[in-house]
Image 1 (cartoon, rainbow, N blue to C red):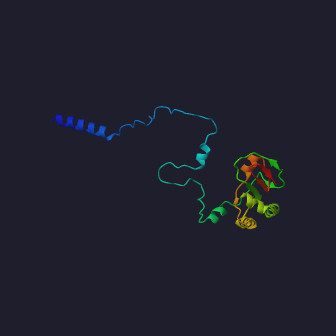
Image 2: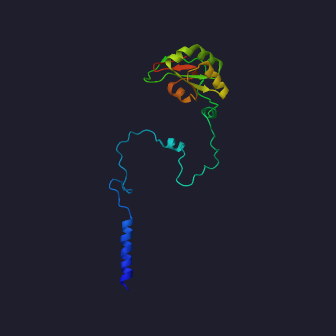
Image 3: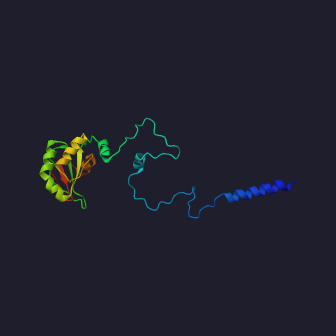
Length: 186
């Protein structure tokens, strides 16, 4: 009778050992520190990942006190959801002409919903088309105002976007302005 519990215990031990997965030979052991192959310094990318708002695995629950995501059914609806666009670092005015070195930069221009920008677009339409320049509308309030600007330069891409980052990086303070790989010109 004493052999049955002993045999049962031995069988359970073998069954448990077989059920456990074997360690993968290439899998790092969790208690060993990671080996850094190269570290070039720089700034942590954590803020970029936090902006993605990763969720812990489990039932999906919206964050507390957050507005529901906008429902956008079309490209026009998505664009309208981005408006109004305001660029705090840029105002209408005369930007001084200067030389820059930005090889490979696609020609782009900054305009707003104002009389100066509308006149600039009418005057430079042919040159902008020839350069295949892309426009950033850096100050615009409504989809109707954006559509009116697009009617002035058919065939040229105009996208609503804040120009603050471009202004800071290139030292630009005013628009309308054309930015190419070789220069900035009013």
